[in-house]
Length: 156
Image (cartoon, rainbow, N blue to C red):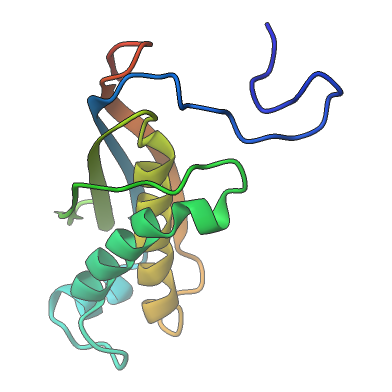
């Protein structure tokens, strides 16, 4: 299998997508942050010193999706048509699950954008409550599903 991010001289390159058809492409990624009961309680009762953690994490996730091409060298700058971030409280863990959906009509997929948004959202939660719990664990950042493009659909 040839790697598409290397040219004939084995130098890095960004893939040329100009000949690909424009299709609607959607990617959904998720991840979990596990924390102490004290950190969880501070977030859900909005008693943290840095402000509303979950709302800030959603904004950060959206910004992460939009900035992916600035962070991942071979990602194309994209004209995104939609971004959504959902947060589920996992009281039994305790912790939270972030799910990010990225959408566009274009020539390349949005998997990296959904994964980056998820990671940035989770890191924002960590940043905002690390004074309460430095032992938080971010895990299972993964692509849940994608649709569109020549490789077809994927669902975990």
